[in-house]
Image (tube, rainbow, N blue to C red):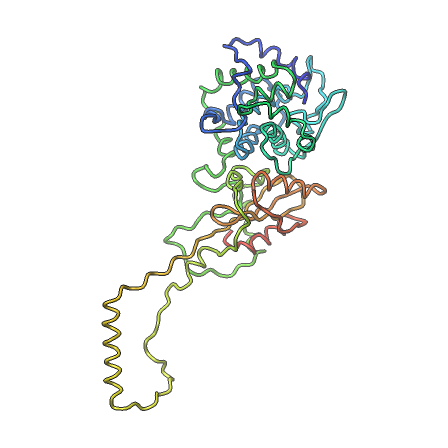
Length: 432
């Protein structure tokens, strides 16, 4: 946490005219129906707000607001105020102190809240990419509410939880935890909360009522909302129209399906996979128990379809034993009795249709070269995510992904490349 390092950078912005918001007006950290992120707060407008104050914004930070929205919505928190806190902590992502002096935290650390930066040259923690750094910040903020954080990304977050340093302080707060509470504890100063409030005020006054300069970033933060199509990954083909569905499918190997998915991704120009979940990720952050066995939908629907009973004996059937002269009469009486019985009894109820379950294959990435296959339950059935991870951090990154986006998930296997993991994913989920 680097509050003092940012004060000089903020001096001019705090002198801008405005109504002035008190720190006490800051909202609760957790989202509720009455405490939602305003619709005007979009990644495109936030990036315009940020570039207005830092025209030299680095290329790696050009879409950082997308990550705040994606992870924040998955965690159910006011990610917009966490974003305003981030610009204070980083000096609008310049990572500079007053008068342009370099701060303790450097841009390559992807540490947007000064986690572990205790001053006197201690630079704090480093994270492998922007997305992971944003998740670490948001998890640390959410921790103040007492919300359980499974497999925290940041070591600082894990230590604060283990040491229980916030428990007594938190127990003394009877109302919902707000950013004002957090600000006073974070920096031991009410001025810190006033700065967060001021940034929110400036954004609302000067950017909320302007056209979104980059609406495509909103679609990137919420991939599944874009034209109603799943667009977070190249491995989830669109549903077939009902009129085109068939009852049989040719057998295709997992290797062929994986190669096809990769080729289609390149054909569509999708040279970059989604970084750590997305909104879809909104789709993968589903609560649930361990997934049940998956039966592909179309194959299940074809069972019993078109079945016909042939009442005629086969041509090579052997003749039956001779019958007595009374047999035809007895058979006729039996037939009539069966017909009368069927007419007086209600028809049997049709069998209940089998429960439909589906599976999907997704990809996500921490930027590493190794791949982990994660299986997780979804409302429709089950998902298989091929997660690219960094060597030496496989378990930590997989645990962080499962905790944030694949609740109830488990690691199926670890692979040396993405294509191998995709092969296995399509073997387990041919419908993809």
